[in-house]
Length: 238
Figure 1 (tube, rainbow, N blue to C red):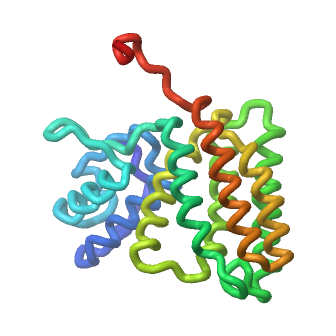
Figure 2 (tube, helix red, strand yellow):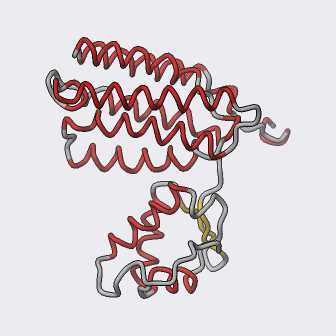
């Protein structure tokens, strides 16, 4: 397993299992633990400096949200890339994000407008760099996804409920893992249009405009779904 090369303990022995979970999740989302990488208990114990019990608990939780996959008694690995799930994740997250904007809060707060527009501009720059690259790879697609989620972080400033916050975290982590490594397979078209619409909503400080922008992003992404479907073998249709 290609664990990060660190010469010190990352997590103290007595810290809570949630910190093991958070550390593994961050490594998967960032690409330090790439898709398909084997996750062996002994390697993780050495890297994180904790016992096997919190590691196994964390891996089970990560499997439940689609970041890890396992064959009992055989192997555990970082979930492989499945481009066909990306549109569904975007649509599901848009359904949650659209209920967050409130006038005067989060991205629409008067004091946040400047930072919000700057985050949108940075995302647009990442998209343009992606488009300009003759062979966009994981680095370029990851830059787009990370910049988009930097905008989302400000949107979530309105304070979702605990349940909604958990869903946003789980689905967001899975989307970042799947979309960030797509390279040229990442469809930035719907996002490009959405950025301009969200910017207009921020300038107007209008939550309805922001919700409409997210609804349109969901519809555009859903229309792109067939292009990302994984071809099925002939026996599937029998």
